[in-house]
Image (cartoon, rainbow, N blue to C red; front, side):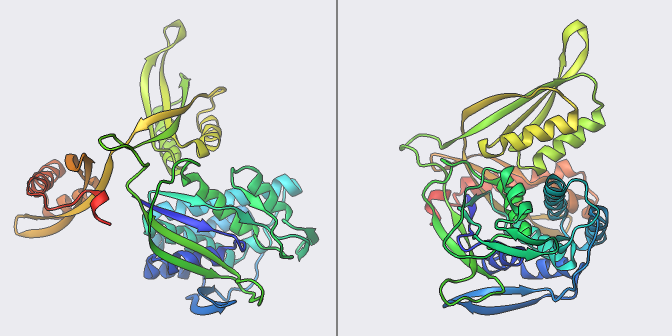
Length: 411
């Protein structure tokens, strides 16, 4: 499995996060295209910060004050050029910032620095970069905030800035002040890290790993005493270390609530929101409730680090007054890989991804990914179930010939 480790030891800002993810292997063309939907083509250069080479992102955008609705409008305008999961994540980042601003200032009219085009482009760029990396989880190391005072649109403020502190208060992220004066973590950086933390793995969830790529994102300043960079690493692992012959396992929380006054459309939308927020699974089961009323049991499986956030989302989306939490449930998880299968039907050929489940060095289950199969089925005018069947038959044939290696043999 692939994980992303972010190390904001020298602080975090939107441009630093975007630069680090690009340097770590995110799809540069897709990210630039997404950012260009908001600003002119950003400048991406390799610079040196206290002896460390890093990518510097500069949007060259001018400052603009906007309301939340105006910011969301700018994000909506970028929709044709941004992958939908990244777009949804960018919206949630700004909702976090807005909630923090209202917590600090009360009802406010305009964003200041964070409403400018450069902040919007940085957030869209970082979310798109994360999406293209396709990692299975994220670990965020302690965030250095800095100390002293800074200056912004509201005058002189203590560090961390009030909005930064408010954003981080609603997360489980660990923070330190560090030894360097100045604002090291901006509200934009804090909101991105908070959103990324929704996909974080638990404290005990990162087993031994091998480092695959390393990236550094540069900040604007270049102090000689410390590299002003944020480091990202993509690592690969086969799961939690286990004894020979045992299945890997991890720990999850199970959240449940019963509802009898919510429509099917609302439940379907809620399940989508739960998955976007980092849930590992979500379902709705018909049940009979008190007084014989029909209802649904809504069940969400999530990592312990995100259970509070998702429980709040369940209450907001479903209007329920209580969420049951079954904490620290151990689950067994199979190693899995995704392989591409060459499928040729009616004279047309396409490589389709198939997810393989491994046990004791052998494939014991597999399933073709639906969306690529659906697109191919539409192209050749064939039922998608037939395309899925053919792809899976080809995959089983390859598995029987042992054309693939289990995850623990690939490194």
